[in-house]
Image (cartoon, rainbow, N blue to C red; front, side, top):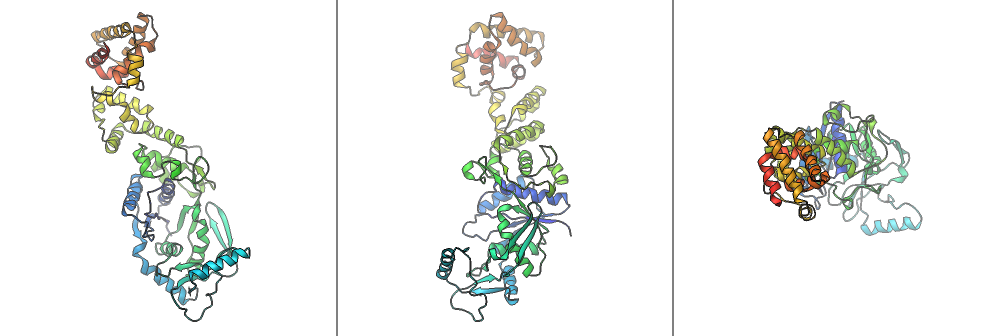
Length: 462
């Protein structure tokens, strides 16, 4: 049987980076094995479901490069299917109707706790032969003895004694099925061969295995992925900052970087740090997954993002920057020196926002200046220093050698002529030329601006 995996988000919020990692594990496992990636929407929580969350989840998955082979399938459209299987279990006497009131259940828990026992349903309706009065739920008849043994592809053997479980509900009194039952039916109906999901679902797995066996089905291979942790080693959540994929996209992270970083959280192949999607589609395997949680480190993500920015085609970066921020940097790619300037910025950039913040001076003569730097550096600069610089640049212009390699030394010569250090010339000049001290090589900046614009900007202080 070919590999079939599924990702099953609930549209009750945005796609969390932890959920995205689970989706990526499923996706690349399917691709590496020549299998299918199925998308299922677990939307039975009708009070919390939002169409906008579902749209955002789909958009985030697509942005990360995942294309599902089947779906999306919605659980709310399959209620009749689930009920038909509940009927089968009732007919096989592997499930029963329970008429216990909420008050009776509360007393049950209270009595169990008073006796020092685990609070769970005591099975009082298990052998009822006559219908009761009032509303009822359907409970699964859990075996009374034995162990549920799960051979987990990541966790190893997991063994749970059935005494730890109870006769759990599979159909509510309003005739709607519960999560543990819908998941089982869907996994079987969709012929899922591998269930790769977060380890927080491991507690559900024994119940799901018992349901499958009761219906005569062979359970899939389970693989429970350790949690994504915050720096304080707790589960990553909103209190730690941005957690939605859409948030990281808006902050200027490349999808290639986020994919590579998330997959490396809990998976590895040798010492390789960066992976392209093409590589992951060939090499991903569950054997590379670790069994302990991994810390989500934004500084490491920044480093990964910087690596992918530096290696990405400038035209693709320009397109993404325009889509994300509306800033058109394509004029920089129109000339050879503009391309050099763009690549220099790319070598220093950490996020796409850096391009927007570091290029206003290159796109327009009406650009913002760091007011504090103007006050403390430009206005206190020695007039003779900038005059000497203008003279040096005029000589280069006259010789026709307006290139970065010729222009950068001119700043040092100007400083020497007036008995100053190079920063005494370069700092005020850089602020006049770019508005900030954070810009690429001063020679490259000057070459890009050209003689006329350079003269105009250097004259602005005098």
